[in-house]
Image (tube, rainbow, N blue to C red; front, side, top):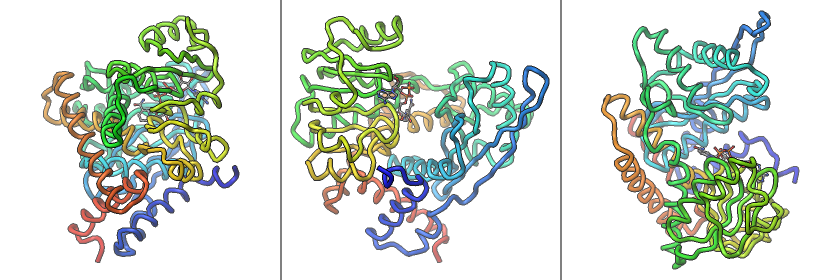
Length: 417
Ligand code: NAD
């Protein structure tokens, strides 16, 4: 297990090195991409409700802006640390490049426990953080977004603070905003929608019928519950779901809307009428066509990957599969759609939000969804073709597609010598 809990920054550096070597690119591509081009550490002072001042540690990492401004979320979590933020910013470069978005990767974070802060303290923290990084972010430079424990309200405070500093409204400074100040329709469902589109495309390639496909969702939260609903809407059978409190299993299928209602009323999917309880371990090992890990990182490990019987794993979560588990799944013929492709619908609609902000012209939900559909299909096909051409895992193929695109941009810009 120890090897599976390595430093995420070291892991992603290894992934970039592998891709550069497999593509036969100039060594300078690795030298530039192995670290962020810019990394800022900031003190984030906050006046607390009791009159004292606490200073939190904040970060913003800008990995690579060869194809466009940096883009990536801000995490408020006690465990935020520099190497994690750096690694997450590299993964954002990969994710944006896989989708062909005109963005490089960015990521930010503040080491804090938002659950211990009052609403006023959280607002002052959000404003203090964006002030501290204001010189390096901006609609043409780096555009933050929500991530773990940050949300649309926090984005609204950051938008307001940055607009005050700039002395004009700057709705393009962050994405994931409330609709009334430039948020995009369809943003909430985008991650799950993108994931389900990639699962549908994979099923077509593998000759699996989505109608009736047994679907298992680990983590019935925002991404997981909407993914379950969209799979159900396509005719799939949602046979098991779970959350931190336990799981619900019904081989005849469950209605995701009713599950959402049950969860809203009881705070868990456990004891959903007609279901039997199921442990997390058993859920991951169920006979099914589709498994959607939508909880946290490191869920499929060397300890349970050999038990997975799904034909397709669609990674709605970030980093749910350890590299060791990935190898096992590949050997066992499980088709894994990697996170950098499967959950990129979120950043894609963030991109649409930013485009709408810059144009000051807003799209209908149908327009957003149809543009998302087009981009997800085209990204899926690019990765699938690379997977076939180089005979590598879909994850490795995604890195090859992404690194090649970023390298091409750096080369034409004259960065590679
Ligand atoms: P969320 O908090 O709404 O949902 C997570 C769910 O997982 C919760 O229901 C929680 O109870 C459950 N869970 C946590 N640990 C579990 C475990 N060990 N076993 C079973 N269930 C467990 O979060 P979310 O926004 O849906 O994000 C889920 C994942 O998707 C994360 O990895 C996130 O990084 C990724 N993601 C989300 C978005 C987005 O737009 N929401 C975008 C990209 C990636």
